[in-house]
Length: 148
Length: 274
Image 1 (spheres, rainbow over the protein chains, first blue to last red):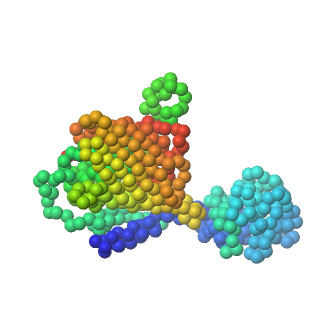
Image 2 (cartoon, chains in turn red, blue; image 1 turned 180 degrees about the vertical axis):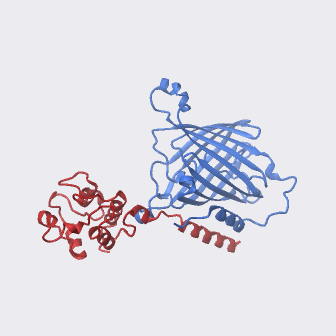
Image 3 (cartoon, helix red, strand yellow; image 1 turned 90 degrees about the horizontal axis):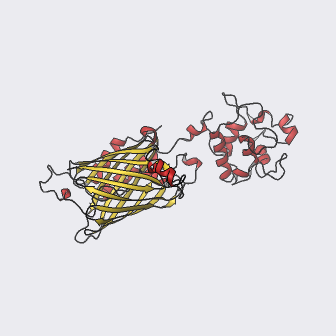
C-alpha cells in the first residue's frame, strides 16, 4: 500500500509539473523574457522586436533625445538599474520610475501602458510592448525590482 | 508544450490505488442497494461517497442560467421565467464503475472545459469507521482540454445519519488553478475545503447545500456557495439549485464565485443505469 501511495504521489507530481502555463506564451515576441532585471535589460531595453517595437536604449543613452530630455541612461545594466529603480521621474516628480514592490505606482509601467501619462507613451514612435511583456516587467517590480 | 496524457494518468492512478479486481461482480452487490442518505453521486457540485456498482453507470446534466436573479424587478424576473429564457452554462457528465469502490468519468461544460475524474472509496461507514472516505483525483482543461490544465487531489469524507441525510467535508488541493504562469503570480495552487449536506425532508425530497471556502493559495472572487431542493423519482434525481457562480468542475470551484450579490438559478438531472 505504501509503495502504491508513493507511486501515486510521484505520478501526481509528474502530471502537475506539466500543467503550468508557459511563460514564453505570455512573453510573445520575446520568448526568452523572464521577470529578472538581466532578462528585461537584454530582451526589452537593448533589443528590438522584429514586429516593430524599438529598443529603449535607442533613445535613452548619452547624446540621444531620451537622455537629453529626462536624463535616463540605459547604456549598461548597472547604469540602467541606477537610473530606473527608486529614482524620481523627471516628468512626474512625485512618482518613482520603478517603485520596488509596487508596479501600479511605477511611472515606468504607466509610460509603457500609456495610462495616466505625462508626455507620450513609450517606446516613442514605435509599436508598444505587448500586454504580456508589460506583465512580466510588472512582475519583476512586484518582486521588489532586484538586481538579478 | 508538455501535456498530461489524461487517459494514461487516469488509468495509471486507478491501477496504482485500487486493489486487484474480482473476476466477476457478485450477484448480490450491496453497492446496488438504494441509500436514503446518499441518493446520488453528487451533492450539487461536490461528489458524495456513494459507490457506483461495478460495470454500472450514471449520467448527469447540469444547467446554470446566466441571468442574475436580482436583476430588475419581480416582473422582469417572471418575464424571463426566472432566468430560463437566458443562456446557460450546460454540463454533461457520464461516470462508470470500473470495479468495486472505483468509479471514473468525464464531465464537459459548455465553456469548453472538460474534466476527467475518478474516485476510490477507501472506507465505508460501518463497524469501527464512523465515516466513509473516498479518494478523489481529477484534471480539467479549458478549450476542450487543450489549454490550462488543473489537476486536483483530495478526499471526500461523509457521515450519514440513518434515513435523515449526510454531511460532507472534502479537502481538495488544486494545482494550476491560476491561468497565469507560476513565474508571474504568487499563488498557482488552491487548497479548498468543500463542506456540504443533504437532508431528507420528505420520503423522496431533499434539501442540499454546499460552500467551498479556499483556505490557502489562489483565491480570486468570492467563496462558491450553492443550495437547492431535489426530488428523487426512481433512478432519476431532479434538482433545482441557486448558486453564486457557474463553477461546477473542481478547477472552477477553486476560482470561486463571481460575487455575493448575484445568484443564479440552475438545475441538475441525474439518472442511474442500474
